[in-house]
Image 1 (cartoon, one colour):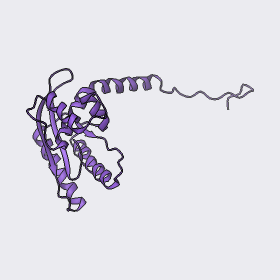
Image 2 (cartoon, one colour):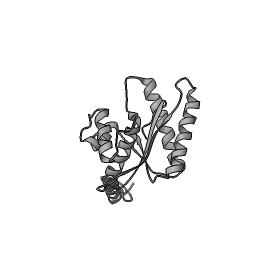
Image 3 (tube, one colour):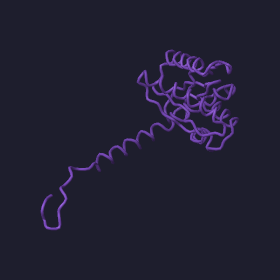
Image 4 (cartoon, helix red, strand yellow):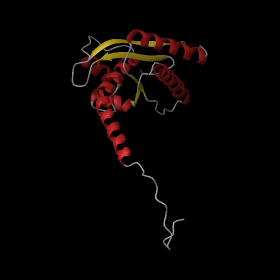
Length: 184
């Protein structure tokens, strides 16, 4: 999901790393810019719930909110992102957050790719006739592709970190010794 209050891109991709991917669905949940924030968030939630009901994904990937110059835009994006994570959490679906540069790098090879490049690569990778419109829809598919490709490596890394922490877990503490050999 590419969260946003005015346009929330949503896409479903089927596949595994190393195999051809298939687009299952793509769209945009829209809300009126002049509506109250609470009403807009309810519309985003309803749209996401409909997509989750229709497509029953195994994972949900959401674009990680990053700082922009326009605080109002960041707030709306963060609120829509929270709604997406909440909808997934209600269903027990794992949620992964990916930064825009991480998604661009995964799909195009460059973390600084332009939206047109992302759209072109999504079109090529999913063997589509044309790039999904608007760009929020293409971005949502790019997020799904990024997650499919990166999840196996991320899972292995998380397992290794967990195993390392378990191996280094503190043992029961020993009582400190005083300089006179007494236990205090």
